[in-house]
Image (cartoon, rainbow, N blue to C red; front, side, top):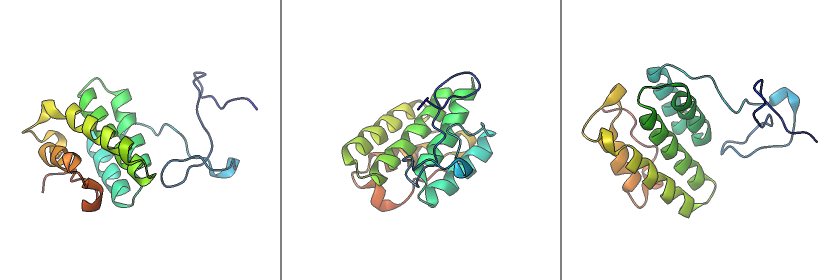
Length: 146
């Protein structure tokens, strides 16, 4: 079987995914694209927050990643947010070691924004949440400053 590819010839998986992002059996009528279009920052944050609250961290990661890969502004901020979402995804999949590593990496990536609130994001709250040993038990991360 040949590999799924996008218009530019890059490998893409057209299989539908479960809530944690694992590919399901092929069903052409239910495929979810790997790369959602990049949204404006506030829309991306709102959508990712909703997805995280619904337990769909893999999809939240894709939302953040789309912005990260399509912008020249604050690329590392978006990468850090994507890393946090991947850390949550690993936890949802039962990979505690991978989860801790990605949450820590995401907190480190967000360090340059400590003490700030770009796009209304609670960077200090996100970093503190990611550093908690039992962050996942506390619920989804605090994206927006309250």
